[in-house]
Figure 1 (cartoon, one colour):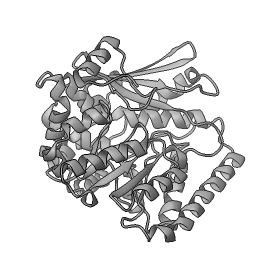
Figure 2: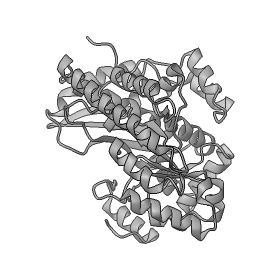
Figure 3: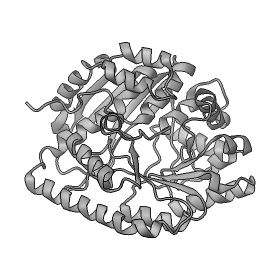
Figure 4: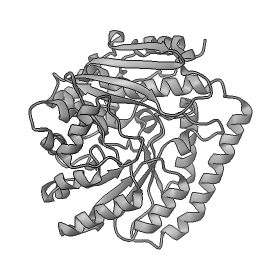
Length: 399
C-alpha cells in the first residue's frame, strides 16, 4: 500500500485559509454542500478509484495541524490568533463526506457546516489526481515531464532580458496543486522554478511548499466565497457581491487585496466594483473569458474612475501556459502591474492527458448557488431555475 497522498493539512491552497477565516468570523452558521465533477473524459473510469479514495479520506480525517504548521500560519500577518486556535483543534469529519460510484462515474459530496466541509475541496482533488495518475507513473513519463519543464524554464529565461524593457516586472506563481500529477512532482517543479528564476518566480498557492521551500504563499479568494453570499438571506441577491467584498475588506483591512471577478461575469462584477472598492482592492483576478477582453475592460473601468492603473494589479490564472503568459505580459506590462498564476501547465504536463476536475459549492443553507462564468462550459449550477433568476437579477446573457 502506498503512502497517503495528503500527509499535512498545510498541503492546500492559501485561499482556503483566507476564505475559511472570513466565513468563520462572519458567517459560522452557514451549511454548505460541495460536489466533485470531472469535466472531461478520463482514460479509465474514475469509479475504479472509489475504494482508494475512501482509504485516503480516512487518512485525511486522522490528520491534525502540527505545532510548527500552526506557528507558520500564526506568522502570516493576516491570519488572526483566534482562527489559528480554531485550527489547533480542527479535524476533518468523515461523516461529512461521501464517496460512491454511479456506473463509471465517481461521486463525492461534502455536506455539513461550511467551516467544517469547505476545506475538503483541495485535498479531494489532489487525492483523485494522484491516485488516477499512479497508473501512468513510470520513468519514461517522468523523463518527458522533466524535458517539458526544462523547455519552459529555458523559454522564461530567454524572455527575461526582454521583460526589463517594460514598465512593470514579469511575475509568475505556481497555482498547480488542485490538478497536479503528484505531490512529489509539484515539489520538484516548484523547486526548479525557484532556483532557475529567482527574479520572476514569486511564490506558490501551496502553503506547505511555501513553508518548506521559503516561498511566499499566494492567494486571496475563490468562487465559493462570493457564491456563499448568494444564499445567506441577510442581503438581496443583487447585493451579494458587494456584501462579500465588504466583508473581505473589513476582515483583512488592506491585506489580500485581489478580487475575483467572474462569479456573475466581468461586466456584472464591474457594475458593483465602484470607486470605493476599486480604491480598497489592489487588483483583480481573471479566471474565465478572453483574457485580453477582460484586461481591457478592467483598465477602462479604472480609467473611468480616474484611478491610476499603474497602482493596480491584474492577475491571470485561467488555463495559462508559459507562452500565453508572455503574450499577455507583452500586451499589458506597460499599463498595469501583472501576475501570472500557472497551474496544470506546470504541475501536470508529463504526457498523459490531465483531468479537468473540480469540487464546487452547489448549495448554501439549502439554497442553490451558481457561477455565471465568462467562458462557455464553466458555468456551474444544479438548478436551472435559479441560474435563470441569477442571470435576470444581474442582467447577464448566457455565453
